[in-house]
Image 1 (tube, helix red, strand yellow):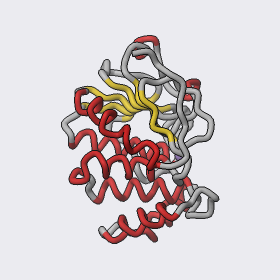
Image 2: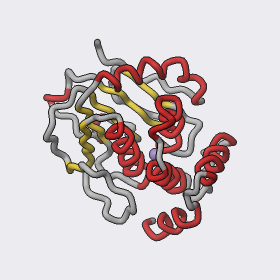
Image 3: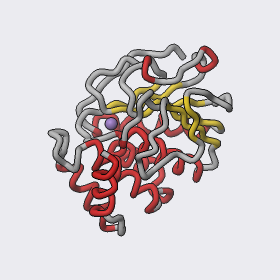
Image 4: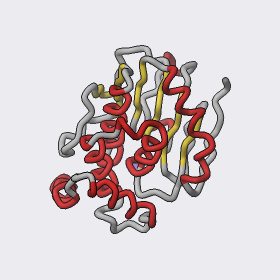
Amino acid sequence: MAKEAPEIREDFDLVASYLAEVFDVIKNAKKITLLTRREPYGDSIAVCTAFERFLEKMGKEVEVISGKPADEFPVQPKNWLIWEHKQTPDLIISLDTFSKDEIYYPEAFHDITLINIDHHKQNDIMADYHLIVLQVTSSCEFLYYLMKEWNYGLIDNEILEMILFGIIADSDVLRSEHVYPRTFQAIADITKKGVNFNKLRDDYLKSA
Ligand SMILES: [Mn+2]
């Protein structure tokens, strides 16, 4: 399959019909490598950490590759590599990254299926599948909706904590303009499960 330029959609509902197909690709992969940007920030790290845990619960072997470490953040991927890879994956997923120049993408990766998950207005990553929506605070918020569709039962409180951290970090504690009714619904659902908003807000403010 030839890789194509991104299609960017406003709202999550506009990708809904496409989700089952993408999840089949994920289910069929055994080794999955998650890529995020050279200089990861709260949302990038949290979305990789949450998705790594979700995929591991599905029985996948997962590696996360980014640029420099971000020790200031309270969440960290388990199998985190800095600008190098160990496994040869059968699926690659780029997360929270708007440009091909921002991800680790060696020649060895070029023929491997790539899914591009993001929420930025501009994105130039050529991929086999694009999941890009604008009306979310963060990639973490977007991933929460994806995981809910894909396998709600695998979402535990540890994953929810990372999701809420990413929402808080990328919206700068809900002060950004990219906060939507759906965001408040997600926060209500997550905190109802016992995840502590105030603690994560304080963690974020300490790291910022
Ligand atoms: Mn983001």
